[in-house]
Image (tube, rainbow, N blue to C red; front, side, top):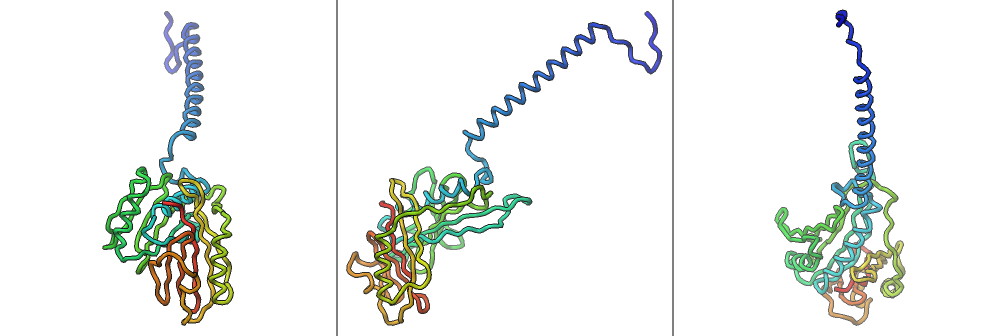
Length: 282
């Protein structure tokens, strides 16, 4: 056997070259199989696994969850108060990541209650919400707070909205906008007629009329029509709505009456704000 000069690799035998090529082919094949398997698992996960962070669901995907949550909340209020849907709040420019802007959505319901025990009202509402929401009432900064999870990282909260009021909200947190949010619509001719008669008693509507809607858990749609008018301070609120169910609130500046539709009216400065609502059935 001849010696190999220093600094040179020994020559490969033919059998060694064949074995090396065979290992290389196996490595290439294994890499291709792994890439196909990984792609398949990713495809399956995207379509079947639940999201692990809210950034995996855009606002266009989370918006309908918020709408359904508002419908569930109106049904859960039941006879404990007089509800009215609030206009949605869209906030753009929040940060999804340090590099990406996003949008957040919050929808709410104001509820006039007959007594001042907000904690008891929130507890009864929590008890009527779907069990999967894991709703409960705790204390935050000395005040009762309802918390629940409507799914897809949509947070539900309930708290005092001031004297004689409870505020219930459903919010997405900051999300990628996706295709954006489209609020649900509904035919609210009946509620609009009640609102028009009330506003007509005080003169004419001041500003635009708002129609707000949310899908009910058992089918149908919750609807609120909002408007306002100028009115003198001595004009009573109750007289604009005629006979009906006993009001839970009837003062010079506030009027709230359950029913179908329910009515909320409030005097603010020299205007009266009115909300006429057909809630989801309990």
